[in-house]
Image 1: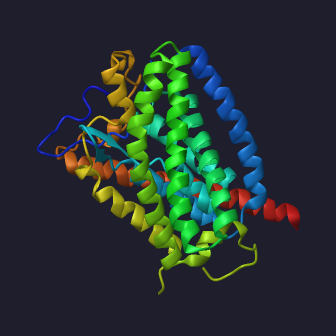
Image 2 (image 1 turned 90 degrees about the horizontal axis):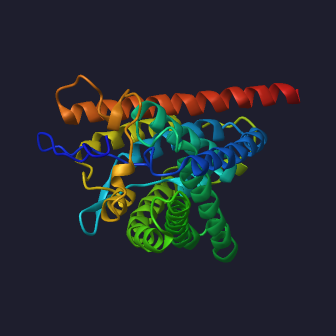
Length: 237
Length: 97
């Protein structure tokens, strides 16, 4: 799949939001990935149950649907390389880290099970990178931005959104480099700078799409930016 | 009738899949590094294939097959998350009563 993807057929390029395929990570690293992922997902399920409200329920569906679709759109970066949105920071900014972990887990899980995007053995590692590390790092950076820029200011939305998205991609790429190194696939001295460099560019795309999505929500339905803290009283949607 | 925001959000996600056939076919970040550093060959194909690489099987037109794959994925993931969290929300609300 990985080698046949990217071949142009009838002038249409096949999109391939490649997540790590089986074989990139060793069995011990793959098992460790599943263990870490399962731990965070279990916490996320417990925490999210206490946070759900009438707007968050459909928002989790919409966010997952958008991220799934957006991940199909590979955009070109320098040197015949492409990248695509991960969405972990975007989901975390809107839904909070716990609900975002669930949304990202569902997206990455479905991609592996139904669309053969990302291996089944290495699914745990892919989940750690895209559903957990990107979400938590993105949320952490945005929380700092909220503190300094104000919770609902335009500056926080734009600058905080961009930087948190960029950082979330970089941290996930760094985890990938360490997982490759510990697997014996590629030495850290090679994998880390190479992955960091290319994802520094892909992260710009991640930042732009994240800021665009946040700005769109702030214009179309600003109350949805606070969907997580929305009260549980019935309100007309 | 006013369209509720979450139905609109679902349709926005569907609309995004329409441009999926135009996505870049170049190797992505990880794939490029794997090629450059010579470990791309360690990749193993999936043991089975459902809608591999988002291309719906059996549809001749590649663009249409990709959009179809995207629409199916968007719809499944939307129903899975909205439905699952709705049930969890209902259960939590019932416990509080």
